[in-house]
Image (cartoon, rainbow, N blue to C red):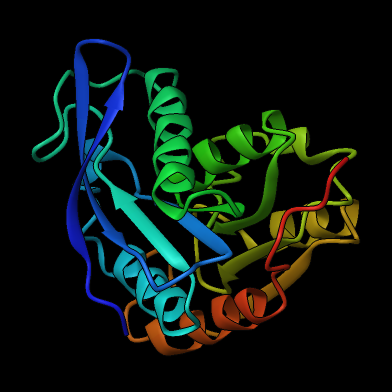
Length: 215
């Protein structure tokens, strides 16, 4: 697996974010990974974020995980869910620049899934989306309507109170083109369930196109 290197992601003129980049030789696709809510201890070193990075890097995808503004070594202060969208978009741009072009995808866990979904629904250039433990009890994910062309995976645990199984089933039934994985017995934090989580993400990554279609 390609080792990660420190990277600074620039957002505007006066804000920079702490990040880690893994860049294989001649990558044709890469993924940005968004961490959970910083008010609850979320950062880019979260075990779920790290697991996603590992399995994607093992499949020769470029990866970029980063800290949202106000977290860790990133500048600024919390953006209330709005500034974080700018952070994720800047991270995608930084990944594309590092790769020299190619397909860009985004993954997010919990609050990061909300950010990833909104960015994915707005960015026509995006080539893949992963939503892990989307907090359906707190946010709406209806923006996925009409995004059938976007290879999307949704993963949730069957014991996650923030993503209740019934709500998860209703959401995925609404978007039948979305690949889904329900991790038996996993809670919101995937304690003891990181391996099956990684398997689900790896299956999505294996089928990710290695170049962006022109639309």
